Image (cartoon, rainbow over all chains, first blue to last red; front, top):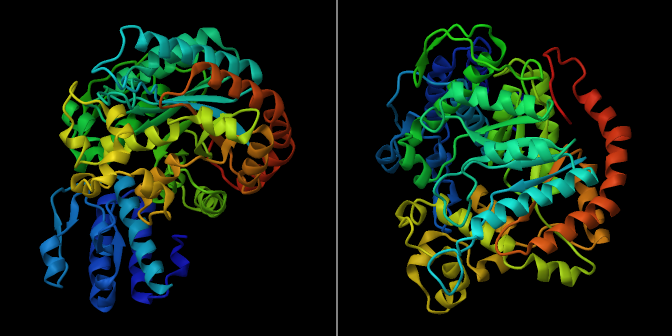
Length: 115
Length: 417
């Protein structure tokens, strides 16, 4: 369950709380930026997440982080290969549903790593 | 738990020809009308129909508003659900959607259900020039504004990222106030949670198991209570999931009558939604039904392209569940579901969903080359021998559970659950 209270990484939880506040005050674009920064910082603290894989449709395994939603705050594939993940913004504004999608992904990834 | 029927209007091409017989489309449209009329008489609660474009054989339901209008005049109680309307403005102008949903609501005396979504197939996105990366933002902007159009007199106009229009009074207004119940198509768990946060019903296309459903129901209702920022003017707390359906006198007969329905449903869905296959589809030039039927042969010859496409082969369906979420949904759709069998088999299986507090179970009855008479018999058996007891428990037990779940929610609620 993507429950913020269950995230044990205190720094990430604090950043997620900030993003959550931005979502509550209808600032989805700011929330996406907060979440992007939080996710990159989390990866830096937990490089093992980069090694985790997940299956694709055809059964091939890809890094879990490649499932980071490509909705305009896109994780550069090249940067993942280099081991220095970077997020590139191709849009200036984000909708609430998009921000929520990034939020769910970040919390789920952190909880998946914990378990 | 309530029950519905779900329609894609599937029309597999004949195996020995290159196109359908001239009467084929007329036939399936009218068969659907008959099936839903029967379901209405027997007390089914919902019919949901998709909007898809250009997905030959998989779905010939490109104008569901026409079918819904026809059904509004042939049925009395069943709720008429768009499952879903494509709301990004390049598919349908938001004002036109508001007008159509409201007109349906009036014609049906307040029975419209407003399901929304974006689609993800290259055939549709490319056909209407919808940018894949932006489609979620388009969906949200349009869906939010459509609900505003339904409640504002006049609608003050809008300057948005994806559409703009001047001040107009968008009429008619819907009968249900402030607007019909809102739903969103959710093929991933993540989208179900977004639905909760936006105060929308989740039309789950993931063929979830009862166990998964239990976890989702708990989290979904928690989010509705604690973290909801409604997209509309009333929330629709509701969880629905799909299941393939065929009810017959014996389990063996149900499986036989189920025919290639689930397999073809899954195969054709996977075909169109996978960019490696659907993105290369030759309009008017492919026989998907034949390709599906010949799949066994391709497996034997080790067709590399087939393996790379990720399409589920018959061998694959017999193996363990895939881990990837969308692929897992296709896998489950292809297998004989828990609603294929005798009335006893189905009753026992679907009780597990009821125990996990599912709001609505929606049956995929019309799929592949199943026969109309078998679908009618199936609806009749279920409707007379299984549905009444669930309906009774819905009123006595599930309503009380929902009341408890929604305790403290202070948003207006418009839900038909």
